[in-house]
Length: 227
Image: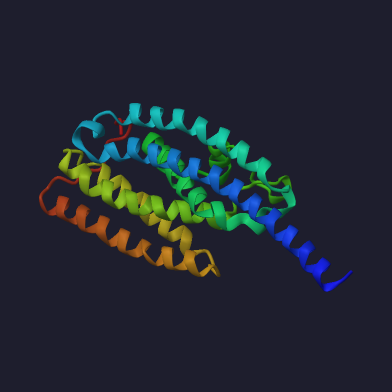
């Protein structure tokens, strides 16, 4: 093979690779748009009107996740299954954002932490990398940490909405979350930096609870009392 032929071959390879990346980008853009729509629905819980109707906001968000599953299904067809990590940088941030949104919905519904297994069902992906398009553990953890920041904001806005019990529940949840992350030996630098922000979320929520306490408004929910 001559030098010209060799570089002609390489150019063909590069062009094909660029075509794949462009196809991926188009689907990822659609995913990003759907994520923005879900976020818009859930952001309303920070306002008094939306706060009073959290269940309907969660139901609407769950409906929009059906579009996510369709779009993820299309994304899976755009590259060879064994090349997940070759193109991972194209969708990792939107996958983290979608994980955050799924985690936020589950928390609003049940005051509990979404599992990785629950997230993959909501998004229409896999748990195991051997099965192809999956939710990487680090992407799952990044999404959970984004949710922690959202909960610190919710703790403040709960007080404005007159729900003085929710900040205490959020505080207990975030402290448990922080304890869980302390068990991990995080090697991923971006993930470690995001985890460093968790201590500020803990502090912010503790300040809200302290303020409620000195005002005599902080009360633990009674056994069997609705959340």
